[in-house]
Image (cartoon, rainbow over all chains, first blue to last red; front, top):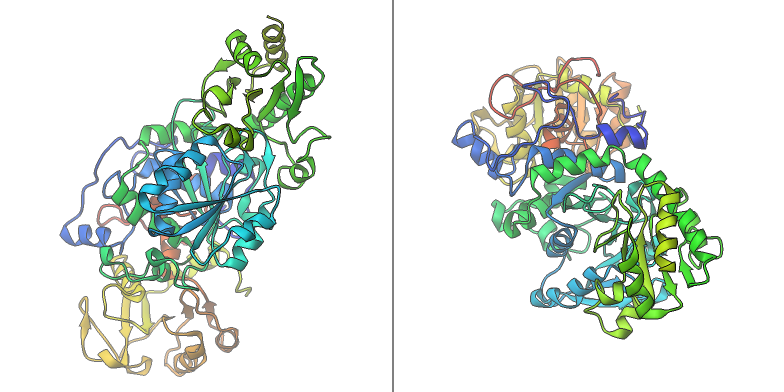
Length: 428
Length: 177
């Protein structure tokens, strides 16, 4: 099945991409290479590996064969040229920015983002001198207005956490292309099953594998996918990619590695020097989760639509924000970008406000009250008192996490049980 | 041949068949892409002959460097072009004048010249453009999968080791699998 003419389907790739039976033992499942290091043939072999002249494994901080299967798996599913596994989604973002930015640079980011990313951009990045300029995905022109000669990237989420905002990736991508900067899309909530941002102009895709890709709430992980679409040498804006690198005897990464140079730069300059390597064991669990991605996402989306429809009719509920609902603000964008389903994460507002939100999360018996999304289990949280607590009141509302907002991540339990739990918790 | 996409069987067939590769535009500087490809292919059992007029008579990794294709005293199976696309037609002409003729013209990443391709194909040669033999070998042997690259291959068969050296894979059977 190696003929370039025939491309396997999504479910087939979810199971097979990146994986072959182990050459030595014939083991069919991906072995967990729980090793820190790998032996060399001789000093010349070692030198060739360290100098990037030959492919191979040296040290798990730089690369690991179990993680490599995961990298190729996610790259294949996204339609990218290469992947890089990182310890967490947050760390994946840092490694991406580390490859693109130098102190004093700016990047434009959608203000509709996961609260953790907002914090990372507003606070931690200041220590590196990376400056975020916020833009509104509901007003695409705001992205263009936010550009400056110092802009090095644009960052958005495909489906935005927490409130089911769908970003018009193509429109933002056009602005990025005109500005000569890469578009980075966090595709965590959609997964490539629902949306492939590279098809719409994304140059780099990031994931928190912790969520729907791993799917079972057992492993923290992150992924960077190189779209292979950006010309790193055009404007000489990206020294990590287009300048001779002193760390590697002067090689020019874009010239040497072509359309997967960005992933290589992230690995050999970022991951190597910053160190957020993914555990091979986590990679194995996440790989196992990905094998059922199609089935899980189908069930997640079916269940979520049913729950959203049910909530919309409840007297306790003031509003429901789920793009799968026909009247929703983002319904048209959802039909374009996530036609198979609008995902499993959405918010709704309780007429009883902050206190009703706190009460609801205390009363559920099937839903788990915790800070995560994308588990087989249904999850609930009141963002204003938890994940978005560190934002100002204005920022909370802007991020879709006002005092009355409850966020659900609907699991793959029987939908009757999911609804019954909400019913009893609302009535309690 | 559609030069936008090559079937893996086409590339695998070429890399499994050619034994002697002449690298036009070879650089002896160890940080240049041509040096990387040169070293990699040598280690996988190919005979690689570096061509660089400014370096003629010198050696790289034990291989004599020649000034031009015509100076090479042995038959060449594949000419690998590491020069700008504007030089490709001239290099193909030189290749066609060799006796015996090479079977393959290969042009590196970003090197694409459809006129040169037609010249070679009309004379019965196979052509590959905008590809690197190191990357293609890496893809088809599964070596490149170790660094997370999408090899765009899918197989339930074990990858085959090269038989010498740790972490060195072969291309596998001559037919596509």
